[in-house]
Amino acid sequence: MGSLMRGGRKLLPILATLIALLMIGPIQSVDALGVEGINLDDIQTLADILEVALTTDKGIKAAGYQLEAAQAQLEQAKAGLWPQIQLGAEGKVSNAPELGMAKDTFRTVSGRVTWAQALKPNNDLQAGLKITELGIEGATIAQQQAVVELVYRVQSAYMALVEAVNGHRLAEASVAIAQRKVEIASEKLAAGVATPLDVLTAQNELLQAQTMLNAANGGVDLAVLGLLQIIGLDHNFLANGRQWAENLVATQDVTPVRWPVEYEEAVNYALTHRYDLLATENQVEMARINVESLAGKRDWKLSLAGTKQAEEVTLMGSIDTDWMAVASVSANKQWGEPSPSPMGLMDLLIPEIINKHGSEVIKDYLPDESRDNQDPWSIGLELSYTLGDGGAKEARIREADAEYQRAKLLYEGLVDSVSIAVFAAQEKVTQTWAAYQLAQSYLEQARGNLERMELLFELGSVTETELLDVDLMVRQAENEVQATGLTYELAKTELAMAIGVAAEKLVHAVAIGDWALVLN
Image (cartoon, rainbow, N blue to C red):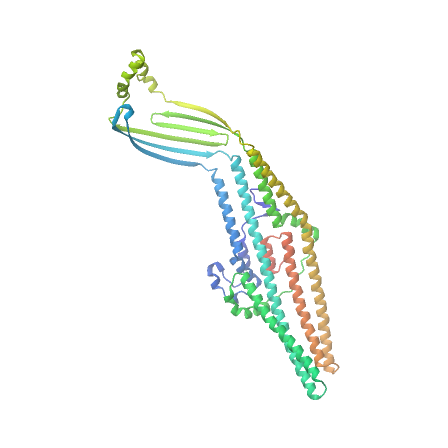
């Protein structure tokens, strides 16, 4: 798992890469300028909008901090394999009343250097390393998923803005046509070829068109505000929002490009790339490692330790079955006035020894120069075994195994639901494409009818009112083509999310409109 590979795709922090991909317009870095430094006029494309959103979104920033925390946890775990060196020193002043030297002062200075290192990862460290690596992978998955969800929200708001602007244009055209109809009806009434009811009917149509225009005005404002909020800009930008939206939509080509995806290909891709599957698989692996770690924890421990003392220096070393090696060097220096000598101490002790044991044993207490020249040493082997935990270890293993089985079932349930989710998303793509083609077909027919009506109007076979009605139908058909095209583009993004398209590929496809290499 240390390779951070899942589904044939390497998971890496991608925010900087995404920003680099999107910096193709005149907008500068939001991090450098701050939100206050943004000029709406510089946001001229959907790519610019995505750039601002990716830089300001708090959810993505939070996911980035989560990733940093996971990386720091891995560094902490790896630090357990590095040598640990401790330095210590102590100074002490004391007397020795038990030796009859209560008035004498002795000074002692000692120092210690300890070196400890794990020769290889033990059971706990191995599990910790694996789990922290999985934590990084999980944080990266969360970051990419946050990017994908943001792209969908931005695209949805952008499409809503385009629809609102198009709807406003249609409403303006409807008002203009209705006003002309009122003028025609009034002229006919004056000429005696129309009735007051005809004028009233035309005025009613104008009232309805004006009502729709008022609603469209509010719709544009709400759409602008919604998009600005999603990309991290506040209501202070709303003052110029209407004109910005008009310019933005006027310069954009929203003609959809078909993205043909076979169902089997989509399902197979989803099984190895969907973010929810990757995240759940990550949890399954964590649970499995936890079970193995608990089961592999030994109840016993064997330690081998040794010491050797040479004059004022003591050497100690140990190694145990957890592969922890420890070595230390300590030195001890003592001095005072008068300096205690072995013979000086014996002068105090000899009378008491004679009283208790007799004079024959005095020689056993006298210093032996042969013994003084030998450096003491020791080697010890220690075995410890933990008993009587009341079955706590087995209970922990059962608990961990239950979590593992639960995680596996959740993963299997997600796998089973993939085919349905992909089918639903692909079916929506198919239906919206069909709706777009149908709208195009109707628009072609409407334009053909308008051309014929214009010829008939020139010949005097139809009235101007009838011509205006057909003209309005053409405008409505054009608006429907735009609306169904936008719906199809959004459906493509939903399908991409359903099959787990990588965040950087989805950003590129949505921003640039190039879907050819999305699944490669």
